[in-house]
Length: 231
Image (tube, rainbow, N blue to C red):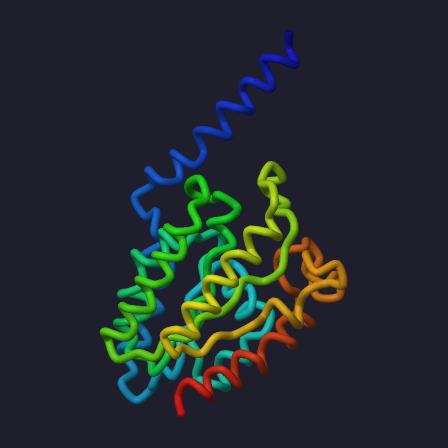
């Protein structure tokens, strides 16, 4: 009986947490970088070359290797746990209003993890397309990045066919970038394990987020893409 009650409580919590998260007054994370954005705007002599828009994979990149951003005049606007639904809401504040020359959009894996709602590939793709089009309308060059390999989410082990969903979304992103003459960063291929599904364990501890060795692989790929996009 106690076990059944405990399981029932866990089920209620699992259902309630996403609803609670969405009911929070700052669900899109607008406050996360508000002060940093204002500080950047106050330094008129500091040009923002590129904004990296993303989730924890982007946010932790700056934490582990801040010099990559500072020395290249890149700005990190990653927020851990975020989905494309949240990113598209804060895109104006965290990208457009900074007036960068380009934006690297790295998004989608938390959608597959169902961090905010059930996964809908078409909706996720639509959110990324919206960010691309917002950038273009603002004179910012969009760069589309692939999702990193992953075959399970340690915080939501109930999600099935993770690797297949990532492969499918990456195929859509690459096709879209090709069709619309956008620069596409393929992080997946050099980061995937020999099984073709998971993140190479040499680059990660949890199977989702890169460690510094992984970011060292990603950095030149990003820089090459940026140079190509800004030609």
